[in-house]
Length: 144
Image 1 (tube, rainbow, N blue to C red):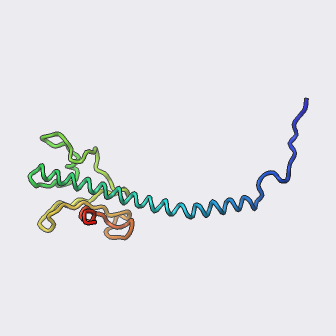
Image 2: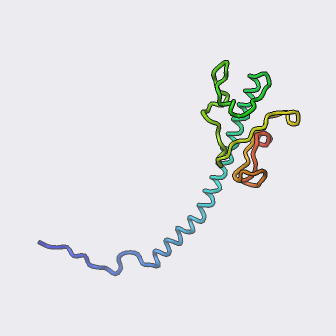
């Protein structure tokens, strides 16, 4: 019976220099790709917040139309079934949160502002800010 013997060949495998070149190339590619992916992720978060705000604002308008111009006291009324039709103004079980995990802010119309305002404070959750931290509201979205 013959046994197979493996000979150690000094030229088999990768040298340290070849491995370092591959690691550097992977590092360069990651350095170029990761910022672009993160930028697109931020863009997607802002677009989701805009879509949510637009949907909530539309539901508020529909609520006002169905209730002789009266707006709800809170956004929770939008997800409760209507007493007459049994339908919800916002077809969800719970109110959406903005992409950064914060609740949307709602200001009912009053004498100072005749329109309802739905707002997200952005990624930082604080008033003001730039970029992904900037505030979004239905009036700003509508005027774009």
